Figure 1: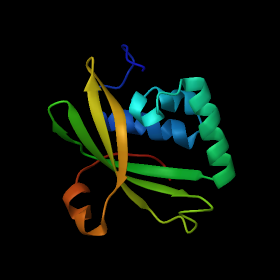
Figure 2: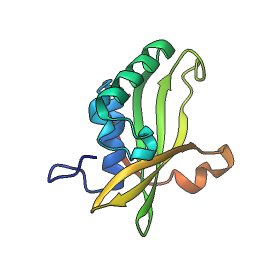
Figure 3: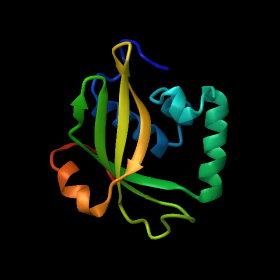
Figure 4: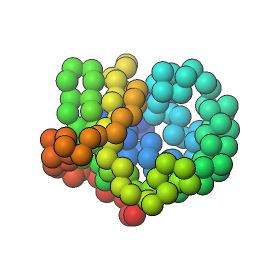
Length: 136
């Protein structure tokens, strides 16, 4: 895990840094923001190799993201995100993906522990206050 003085201090910024790294195919950097549960305990080098193979095979392209205000409860945070991407298997059309990243706080830093999709009926609950937006 990353940590340190340059590590982002908000859950929203952790998700932004992670998605920026994924968008740039910088998987070793993306690994810094994930829990061992999220990486299945795989070290940064081997996880990056695996992700690169998956992204290449699936022809994943990430265009941009919009991160909304986190809901924080104790040492857990839920960060809503709208991902603009496409791939050749699941999201062929490039439809926006409404996601929630669940982060855990450990030693004062936030780490992504889980990602889940948001049902259409629950979107109004989560996607209200835009905090960070990349250039799609």
